[in-house]
Image (cartoon, chains in turn yellow, brown, red):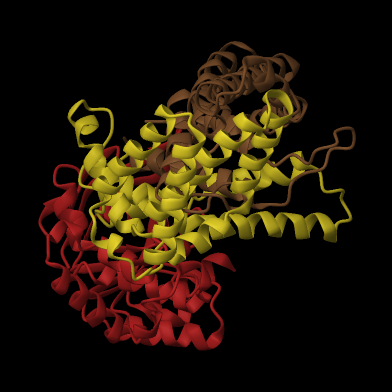
Length: 207
Length: 186
Length: 225
């Protein structure tokens, strides 16, 4: 999220925040004591309310995620008793809140930089080009609204012709229509010299 | 990698994201609505092959990690990776790879028609199994469910996912036959 | 501009797309017309090396499109037929800045280059907008802006007024006329070419007429009947 939270955590490098998140998750799994887990959860919640209230809001907004935690906790309570369920609830609840804090206090740009830096070893092995990662992420964000628009157009066309909305006939035109623009987009990327490592491709078209 | 391959991978990730945004599909004989996101992952494997499909799934996972709400229900962010169902998400990567690897072999050998469909369906079913293996393994190791509890909880979603495998094979075959020559990864 | 085609031909999947030809383009405003499938796009894509010829060589402002693709692409901008597909990042200003990456500018220099070009085209208000929110005319100008920001010497535009309403068409037409860069326009909008120094007419993979706009357009009318 690019939302400014006004939290001091925005100044902490993403790599440090990720390491902290990882350490906290390990610590919470080392103990099964309800007292320790309960006080950890309480501390995290209080700290968040004091220093990063926006994260708590976002955490509550992510109810589909909290719902899966609740469902698994109920399932555990039914099978293994309340004690176990409570341990699970405290652990996963705390971790999801801490993770949300990291997410809301780190901009997408910072994340892309971190991912790109992490991918440099892969580049040395010849597996991937690290700089392509930012472009790929940008491409997805750019074209999700277009693909969605295309899907809605296919739905409209079905309605106009009185066809039943079947997943097969809805999805195939969306996929083909979307992939058809790949040639144009790739040409544009090459023509603008955005990637330094691409090779011209011999190809002619019908126009 | 050619720009064309990079673009195809990104566009397929966009398709997977959109499939998660559209309202869940209700199938008459199953009580739970099924969302189409994992359908997109299976199609990525079938249409783009092992490497392209896996990179498409990886790109989706990266988008989740950097906090974009790209999963069904608008989920996204690091919290997803620490949730009980994270195994299913991470499993998308090997799922797309396995489905893609098998599809590449099917598409080469079978000459179209029912044989190809059966082969792609098998590839997609293997993909579904891979997703569920990762999902259940995570439920056991991370959440601490007993193997029996994890499996029983998981089984509710198997019928819906098998239907998705069928749709993915059908649509995948259609796309490959009408458009396949323009999708080669380079 | 200085574009030289030397004994060039293009075949695709067993079909001859362009018959062998040699040609030199030196004018500042060049138009390309012809029916669909006559080889116009293939011809213009060769100028910046997006399509490589099967025989012969193409040199653009002194650089070989095959051997020196990077030099050629830095000098030739291309606005595609579907400009929405060439905006590859969500925010217009980010997309414009993307074409500057190879120049390795500082953040401030990048921002200045972007805002200068936007002001030149009168689209400063679009910089913070997202590509999918723009109208057809705005998309066309944004795509042109993202090309101009890289300071090309030649700009190729493929059907720039296609699908625009009259107001947007006139605005794009005025913009094209006012550009100091050398321009090659592929179009079905024959009015757009009035006053162009040189127009090429393509027919079935051949250049069948080559001269001032009025003469070539008259020949085109005659050919189509």
